[in-house]
Each structure stands twice: as structure tokens, then as C-alpha cells.
Amino acid sequence: MKLNIARSLAIFGAVVILGLVTSIGLQNYAFNLLRVNGLMYKQIIYGKDLVADILPPPLYVIEPYMLALEAVEQPASATANIERIRTVLKPAYEDRRKYWSETPLSADLKRKLLGDVLVKGDAFWQVMDEEAVPAILKGDKAAVEPALLKLATNFHVHEKAVNELVAMANAFQADAEKQAAEQTELLSTVTLSAAALSFVLIVAGLYTFRRRAIVPLSAMRDYMAVLANGDYSREVPYVRRSDEIGEMARAVTVFRESAEERNAIRAHQDEERQAQMRRDAELDASKSVENATRQRVIESLSAGLERLSRGDLTVRLDEQFANTYEKLRETFNTSIIILSDAMKDIYAATNTVGDSSREIALSTNDLAQRTESQATSLEQAASALDQITVTVKNSSERAQEANAMMSATKESAAHSAEIVREAVTAMEKIEESAVRIGDIINAIDEIAFQTNLLALNAGVEAARAGDAGKGFAVVAQEVRELAGRSANLAKEIKLLVETSSRQVSAGVALVNRTGEALGDIDRQVLQVTALIEAIVRSSSEQSVALVEVNAAVNRMDQVTQQNAAMAEETNAACQDLGNEASHLGRMLSRFALEERRQSRAAA
Image (cartoon, helix red, strand yellow):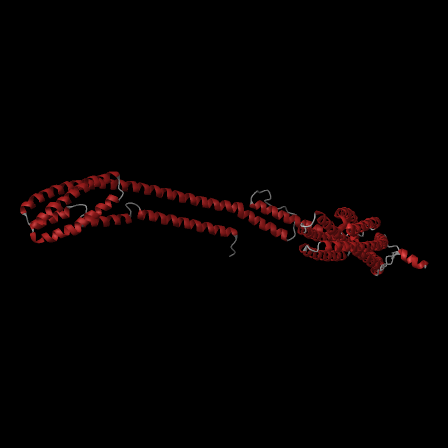
């Protein structure tokens, strides 16, 4: 048998109802079995009553009272009875006394037990322990009789209190049993009512679920079978419902509409497929023509780029392309023209730079020769000073140190020249080199001016020295003339440098690096100055005139060395500049320019 949702729901309801009935029956049976005055309860009560009827209760002192009387009547059993009283009955009394003192009871029973029964029981045991037992053990009949009388009085008082407590306990128990029976009956009624209500709700829920869910689901199943057969004419049922069945119906509506749209799309796709086949045929024909045109354009560009890779800047694409590729041909030709013009400008600027650098090198070489002549004159002046300061050994040693430092200065200048040669590796840095050369010429001019002043000062000091300074005065005059000639040459070189800078503004940039090497020279010169000052201090024993003359000569020598170093540096920079210009010209000669081709054709 096929188990559908409806049958499953019916079976589920039957199982739930059967379980509910079984649970109610078991619950009712348990209530009847365990309730107050029930079977189990009565068996427990019967057992407790049987024990109470057989054994005397520990809190009831009847047994110790009986054993005490028996010990008096039968002295042979006195020891055994007293031992039982002390080891069994008294501990049992204390144990139950503690138990009931800590056990919760009703207020009346608790007050009666603790305030009456136990108090009177404690009084009985006090007489037993303190009077009766010692008298019985000693066999003192005179003491036994009053002790037994007092013990009997306490026993009867205790017995009366126990009987009253028993009456109160029986009344309390009867009332508790009555209340328990009433509560049991009430709970049983409530349980049965709840079970009946649950049964009704389950049956109603199953009926409602079948009507609201199972029947619509069956209808939806039948409708979906119709849709599966391709019949889309019927409307979907239960679309207006707002629950899950309605959502399912609306989802089926979407499927129905999608199927209708799919049929329409399939027909439209057939029409589109035929139209696309016609368009593909037309596109294949146009692609053949386009491919042939593209191939011609690629061949023309490949030929032009091949000539360009060989350095031919006269290449042009003269054959017109199709309209789609004509912009590419114009852009190629324009780029070649711009590149060719740039190469022409660079070539012309390179020639100008080479010419200017050669002129600067000639002028710098002349300046170097004049500086060497000036240095020779200064050496003669130094010889005269050596004759004057022959006794100043300390000054001579420090002068040697100054010479060593000047050698270091020359090495620093050589290092600066090497930096300049390394720096001038690109055309765009030539301008900085030209600017630096101009700065060097200005420095030479300034140094020449300072040399002139120092020579004048030396002449004045030589005049003050009298006959000893006549020879030095002649040398100072010669130095002054050389300084003037150096200044004139510096001005001429400055004019050439300015002219060269204007012509090669894009090609003489890197000589600024020379400033770094010249900074090293300046620092060496400062050290030389410090040594010269030490020489002046060591010569303090000489006359004031001799000290000033010596200082003037040292300063003139320093300036002369600076002139020589800067002249060498300028000459090296000009040579490097010329070499780089020649190298750039050789590189540019690799390109075939339009003007060169025309000049070759004219030749």
C-alpha cells in the first residue's frame, strides 16, 4: 500500500491519541496506587503501625521504667537490666530526641514534643541516672524506695504528656490524610480534563490540517500533472491564499508563465537563427575584403619600421591607406618628422658645444701657463724668505706640512676632474657643466683680484722692511702684474662661457658636480691656511714687518695654487665637454637625416 501524506497524517494522529490514552491510564493508575490512603501508602502505614505495636518507642520511657522495677524485684537481673538501660535504651532515647529536634513538624506538635514530652522525659532520665541506678547497684533498699517513688511520679507525668501528644498527632494525621485525599481527587479531575481537551484539540487539528493542507496539496498535484502533459489553459488553483499553499500555487503560476514564454521564445529563436545565418554570410564576405586591406597596411608599416630601425629618419609612408587606417599613416609620418627635427637640433647644438669647448680649452690653457709663471715668481719670493727665516726651524717644518697639504689639494682637484668626466655622460647635463665653468671663471677673477690686493699689501710691507724687502718688492710687483693679466684672461673666458651657455642651454648641465670636488679643495685650502697661521705663530720672535711679509707671501702662494688647480679643472672639464660633444656627434651620424641626404645628393 502506498503511504501518502494523508494516510501518514491519519496514522500519526492515531498513534498520538493511543499514546495519550495510554499515558492518561498509566498516570491515573499511578495516582491511585501512590495517593494517600492508596495501596502503597496503606502498606507503608501498616508496616510502621506493626513496628510501633511490637516495639516500645525510644522516646517513651516505659521500658527503662519496667527494667528498673524488675531489677528491684529480682536482684539477680539487676546488673543486666542496668546495662541495657545505659547502653541501649538511653542512647536510643538521645538519638531519637536529636532526630525529632531537627525534624520539621507542625508548630503545635513541635511545641508539645520539645516543650513537654522531652522535658519530662529528660527529668525521668535524670532521676534514673542520678538516684535509681546507683541505689539499685548498691542494693541500698532505704535509698531505692524513695528513688522508685520519684521515678514513678516522673514516669506517669511523662506518660500523660505522651498520651496527649499521641492524641494531637492522630488528629493532625487524620486532617492531613483528608486534605491529601481531596488534593488527589482534584488533581485527577484536572488531569482527566486536560487529557480530554488534548484529545479534542488533536482531533480538531488533524481535521483542520487535512482540510487546509492535504486536500489543497492533492489538488496541486493533479494540476501539476496537467501542466506536465503540456496543457497550460487551466488557471492555477489556490493562488489567492496567503499561506504556504498560496505561495506554492504562485510558484506553479511562475512555472506556467515561464513555460508559455519558453514556447514563444523558442519560436522567436527559430526566426532569429535564420536571420543570423543570412547576416553571417554577408559578414564573411566583408571580412575577406577587410583582411586584405589590413594585410597591406601591416606590410607598409613593417617596411617603414625596418628602415627606421636602421636609423633612416627620411622614411615616409606615401601610399594612402583605407579610411580606417589613414589616421595611423599620418601619425607615423608626423612622428618621424618630429623625431628628425629633434635630431637636427641636437646635431647643430652638438657642433656648437664642441666649438665652444675648444675655445674655452685654449683660453684655459693660456691661463694655466700664466699661472705657472706666477707660481715661478712666488717660488723666487719664497727663496728670499727662506734666507730671512733660516733660523726659524719650526716654521720651516710646518711649511713642509703645508706643501704636503697642497699636494693633497692637487689630488683632490684631480679627483674633482674625474667626477666631472664621469658626470658628463648625457646630453641634457651639459648646461650645468657650462654654468659651473662660468662660476669657476668668476672665482678665478675674484682670486686674481685678491692676488692683486695681496701683492699690493706685500709691496707696502716690503717697503717698510727697508733694504731686506727690496727683492721681495720686485717679486710682489711681478705677482701684481700677473694677477692683472689673470683677471683680463678670466674676463675673456667668462665672455666665451656665457656665449657657449646661451648656445647649448640643453647640453651643459653636469659641471655642477664639479662644485663637490671644489668643496674638497676648499677644505684642503682651509687646512693650508691653518698651517700657515701656525707658521706665523712660530715666527713671532721676528719683527712685525717680517711676520706680515711672510703671511702675505703664504697667502699669495695659496691663491696661486688655487688659480692653478681651477685652471687645470677648467681645462679638464672643457676637454671632457669636447669629447662628449664629439661622441654625441658620432652617435647622431648614425641617423640618416633629410638635410644630409639632400647635401649628398647635391654633391
